[in-house]
Amino acid sequence: MNDVSRAAALLRAGELVAFPTETVYGLGADARNAQAIARIFAAKGRPADHPLIVHLPAAEHLDRWAVDIPEAAHRLAAAFWPGPLTLILKRQPDVLDAITGGQDTVGLRVPNHPLALQLLREFGGAHGGGLAAPSANRFGHVSPTTAAHVREELGDAVALILDGGPCAVGIESTILDLSAGEPRILRPGMLDAAAIGRVLGLVPAFGGKPDAPRVSGSLEAHYAPRTSLQLVAAAELAATARRTLAAGRRVAVLSSLPLGFDHENLVWRPAGADPAQFAHDLYARLRELDALACDLILVATPPLDDAWRAVADRLRRAAAGAK
Ligand code: TXA
Ligand code: MG
Image (tube, rainbow, N blue to C red; front, side):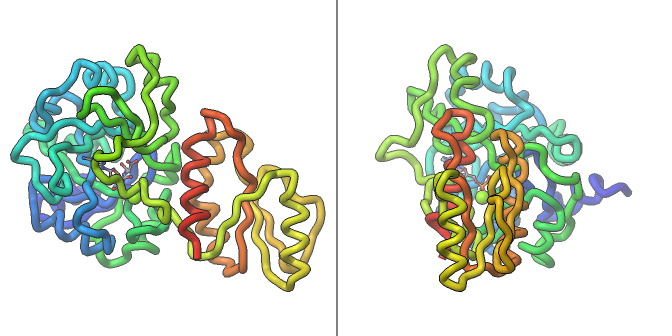
């Protein structure tokens, strides 16, 4: 039996399997099995009212999970699935409350990774089954973008980790709410508002309505390394690092260009110069820098530009969440 078949069999038996997607690694469980879903929450240490995304092998069985599907959902699915877009739709009544957090909506996506698609087809293909899969990290930690990260985060809590190499996108999918009239982006991702706007014919707004479902990705303290992280204007980076070093503290710097000086208590790591490369490397770099046990991680504030929005969002949360 190959790994994917073994993974599908484990999932059918109610076990947890971590698998690669194009965004980050997911911690998968049978979305129809309440006990398996409970294991996800236990393994992650995640509060029970945080809803999970259901991953499907294709858009064709969308109606097993959602009702009142707007035409826009079909157009977006045709344009971007498989891909880094999660659609929030009205749920079918039989979708487990543990998946939806008790809300009347469900998050659905078809991920774009050959191993994930193989697994989803083998697990749910003909029957419209799906896998609930949050990012495969402990609650509040940085999402994993390699199989080794998953092992560090969850170790024995998962029956099998499918290794598909480093994730191509590197940060979580764009979440688009289509359940409440006007489309809204609840979580920015590398699939940006302009691309979605071209398909919808209008550019979606950002942020949920005040009474909208809670998105754990909308908590400030999320995606956080343990080390304090501070965002600093690129032009101020060297001066800030010098001041911190002068105070006897150890500093790690993540920026596209080196600072131009060396110091025994200074570590520099390159950040991608464009948003796609930056996103691709971000979580792996944060993990590396976190492991150095410095006193402070300094990161250059990304440009105020739509293309950088998702990266800026994750950095802001990392800065808010780090102790
Ligand atoms: O890229 C991704 O989306 C990754 C990969 C594994 O697919 N998954 C991921 O899952 O980031 P997770 O659980 O770490 O984040 C899912 C986010 C949460 O913030 C959750 O609150 C939100 O999606 N979400 C899920 N269902 C929702 C719903 N019905 N309404 C509003 N937000 C929802
Ligand atoms: Mg997550």
